Image 1 (cartoon, helix red, strand yellow):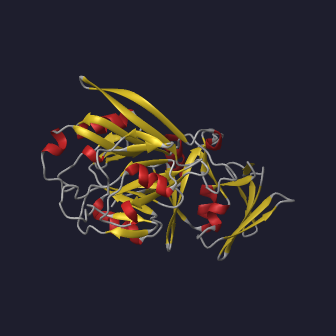
Image 2 (cartoon, one colour):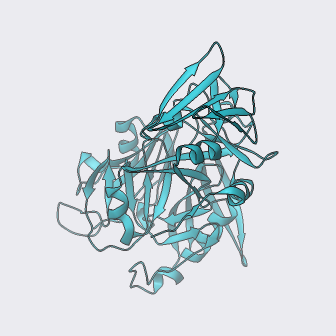
Image 3 (cartoon, one colour):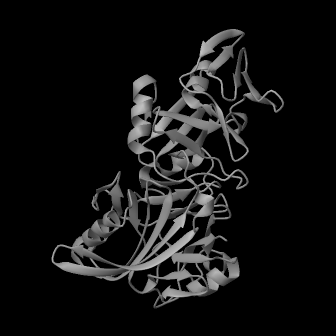
Length: 383
């Protein structure tokens, strides 16, 4: 199970300065994001972050620009623009004052979590804060103060060449802002159920997707009518296909577009914690924390050609500034694919089904056309 570090004092500030990445949240987007302030080394979060599932009640006095946060026997009062706060009626000095941005009030996270005795952890792999609760956790992406993702394009596509060793590999890349208003991830099964196959473009059209990419491996070469997928699949928060004991890497996301790459052996524990909206298991993992991390034996791959054989590939990754990267290449080995995703800016990445299944759809047409109908797909809606 991946370990995280509890943030306290200097470690908190250091983690934010090193790992926070550009992007931001629009007040009207319905998504929450924390701000990292490079000038102070502090992070600020919307007051709504504490009112959802934390057990704290939040009261906002718009006339006095004052916010009160209460949890059990602790009451904290802060004033926008003031470094003086109160904890159970006693004055306390803040390292930085709360502020408003885009109609949203932001408060200093460390001060609140210490005062309310909440446990906040920094996930450096995904530039996010996780608030640990008795019934699970709440994840908040952290971004540089002042950035405006709502003013940037949600989708960005390019054909790009990568120099890897003595080779130049041309790839199709689609970057998707996970923080942009209107962007929504989901997993779609071919024909609406496991075991069916369907053209990728038809899956995209049926689900109203702006973009779509092929997903897990499946039994493509069986003569049977049913072509079962390999690996866990979660769609709409429900496990649509089980693969007990499968150790391959799993791409996981929640309803707020917070994404993770989970080791297969840890998946059921992660699913039982809740908030898993979608998941696709394929592998092998390509990158972990920005470094190439290939361990095909540990993931259960038995064919040695998995590392040496070339072919059409699909890969998925995420950057530190909370962009999802979808990539297809007409011919590459797995190590070359890993290096390519690293050069593209991903910090976490994994391989998806490839060969004739490799496909990428965007904005009404194929970017990469699969050579066969597929079993399932990651579909992305957006404006």
